[in-house]
Length: 271
Image (cartoon, rainbow, N blue to C red):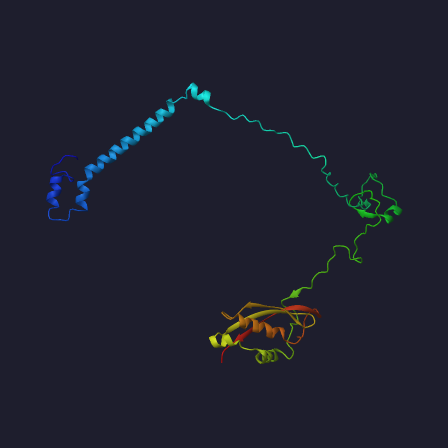
């Protein structure tokens, strides 16, 4: 491959003939001319790297520190004091824990069990004792605090909460605007104000709203389900008109006035 003859593609004799009269400053001519030199550099670099790796491995395997180096080596043997720090005698002691809450005296409720040869394992308490104490899941002595109050529905100190009225979507008698749907459309057309910015920009579309008709017919919880694209002023105007409506005829379920959701689209069209 390194022979300088005609059959060698990197031979100077062959390249001078093949590239005669052509641009010889770059391209295939320079690659072929520098091939032998580049190959030699690569081979020598690989041999040098291999020898360096072998030398480092030999040095690591055979190197041992001398006795003088071991004698001059210093090892830090500083002891760490692990004894806990002493508390300051002048420091006040921590406050005592809060006293436990008062315990209300109760008597364990024992459900009756019918057996053929019944033997009373635990006799029931006397009637006088039951009438004076509270019934619980276990029998325990009270703390003697007479200020403990049992939460009752009348006292209002318990966890009994009034359930919020249900809001229906469909009822037997749906709520209605005074005078019917036609009067509602007339009211909207009369009171709606087309936003000037939307009119100038030529924006139109539908605003879909949802609100609640309460038991007394008043409107509440007005919200926009889908607004007019690019016109939040139109959505605000539609909500304003809905909130300004007079009281409706409330919806009824089983003859009783109930809260009902109502959906209504308002169309904004430039005429």
